[in-house]
Length: 255
Image 1 (cartoon, rainbow, N blue to C red):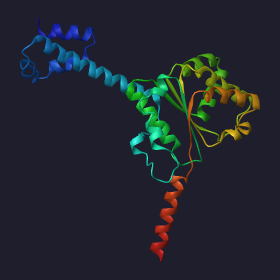
Image 2 (cartoon, one colour; image 1 turned 45 degrees about the vertical axis):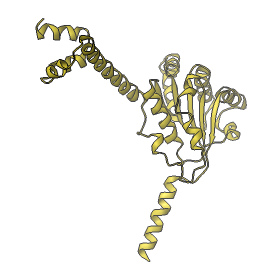
Image 3 (cartoon, rainbow, N blue to C red; image 1 turned 90 degrees about the vertical axis):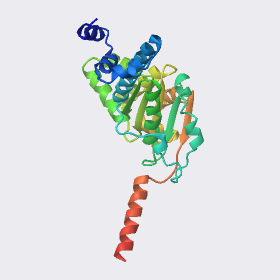
Image 4 (cartoon, helix red, strand yellow; image 1 turned 90 degrees about the horizontal axis):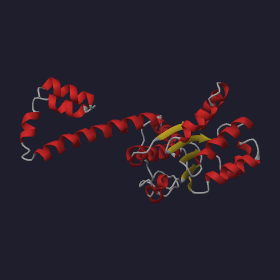
């Protein structure tokens, strides 16, 4: 078989990485080092599998739509935020995802709730799970838009299709009756079918003021907290800490 025929067959089989390897001048020497043909074929197949895994990882990462890149290793657990590093690290094995459990981060703005949510979501992507990150505001806007164009049920189904749904920044805006109902439907669709990571600046006792009625709040919390890891974070905003440090340095300079 000549190269053109082989190349055509490899294209047909969509073996892109093997095509790339065989087109390289140095591959002949590399393959000649294998005494066993099975080992040589195994090497080529292994390269193809690795390339496809990386392609799928990149697709999952792009599909997650994280606003920034954040990892758990980058989080400063000693920066004055009250959260147990061991408890967070215990989630790295992704068992909570396999068990369809939720994670809730509560606390004031600027203490790293979103960072931790993205960090866990990134590990989920690396592990092979599908993830979707969205702020609560954009989630509600998207559902309103889908209601307007008649694709509401399709949008709910799409959101429910991810292994992990990360909902960020719940609590900055109060939700009217329609928005409250939409949010309930998202949580209800996720219940025991997918995992949700939620960040909020409102303690649970204040959710009655966030949603339209107490019954909806009760129904949401009942499903969200049934099987959940809850982290009540406290501390000063890292942005305010940075501002305070900068101000202090400016005062020292002027002095």
